[in-house]
Amino acid sequence: MKDKVTVTTIRKMKSEGDKITALALYDHAFAALADQAGVDIALVGDSLGMTFQGEENTLKVTMDHMAYHTRAVGKGLQRALLVADMPFMSFRLGIERTLENAGRLVAEGAEAVKLEGVESIIGSIRELVAAGIPVMGHLGLTPQSVHALGGFKVQGKEPDAAKRLVEDACRLQDAGVFSLVLECVPMEVGAKVTSQVQIPVIGIGAGPYCDGQVLVANDMLGLSPTRKPKFVKEYTDLAAVAQAAFGEFAREVRSGAFPDQEHSYTTPMRRLKAL
Ligand code: KIV
Image 1 (cartoon, protein in one colour):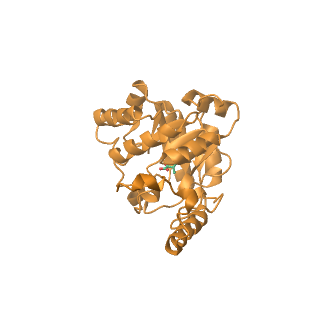
Image 2: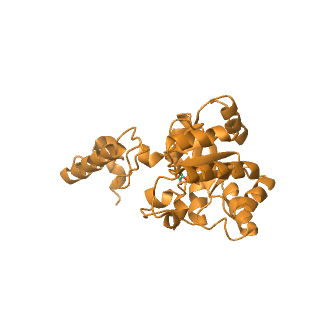
Image 3: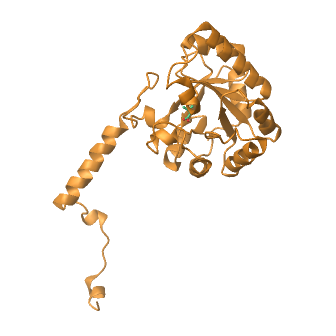
């Protein structure tokens, strides 16, 4: 196993020009596979509301959900840094509740938390960092603001909006975040933000010039049949593989081909005589 990834590793990767790899995932099995494959960051994203729970957006995800999945993912990791999303409103109801919620995720295994946005949360970010909880920022398309943004749309297309993104990234950096997710912006804007801050910028739909890339594991495995943003590259079609296996199982059960001897237990018949 290569060395354990920490927030220090992630910071250093930018200065050394090493690309950072991250995947959003929600369970022990995928976490272990990503870890063994050498992915640097396992992000327990609140995208689980959509990919795992089948909701239209991430707004119904609760602290209980995040705590449950953070624990499960943590059990699968040996090397990757575990970052957990703070769900909708969990960091906007006062500093005390923010600290309590972040502390709960850390107790479940998170090594850092991710917060969306910048307005009105700078104070909370400073408090979290002061409490020893590393914070990852999230700018651009921030799904928890889907209603305010008018849908899942590319952000920062106009010069004013792009300038604001650069300013917001600098504000987050000043508040102490150790890195930043930048979602769904033109690649020129991704490049600009990345070059204007010292912290690593991890893009998702933000072009190739970011310091690293994150994708949702379900999306890149071909397991998200409904909404497929342009930035998703499907590296395989796991849905087809799973569907074929499920179909074969159903056919074999109906025909009697499964279970066969190989998949059954045996005991000497004489032991059953007394029954
Ligand atoms: O919730 C999530 O999975 C995320 C990633 C898309 C970055 O925030």
